[in-house]
Length: 156
Image (cartoon, rainbow, N blue to C red; front, side):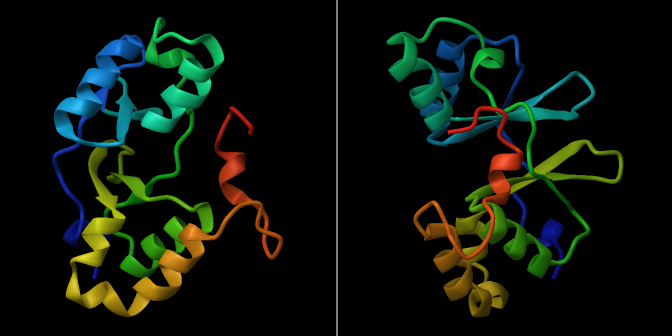
């Protein structure tokens, strides 16, 4: 099974120049926890999560002023739509992610896959126990490096 067989093609996106308040409204309106930040060519420039806003802006400055660029993660782990589902599950576990943007051969955004997409698919249920255990391990993990910190330009 390929990533394209599981992915959701409707991805809620924003631009890095959009305001944080507009991003919050998009997250709330669509009942989601992450926006994929793209440029005019649909290339991924990063991601913005509700946690990014809370930790990097609200708790730090006690306001929601500014642009998405101020608080977004400027790089993103992605997966190609033609990769095998086992690669997807491994990547989610290795980086402790719950959502992953999907790209095509031109590195354009074409979809998104979430752990709930995997959970409802009968063919992937064999992998779920170990994957969810890996994703949910509390940090810091002593048995392997925190790979996801290499992607995050705002170290904790």
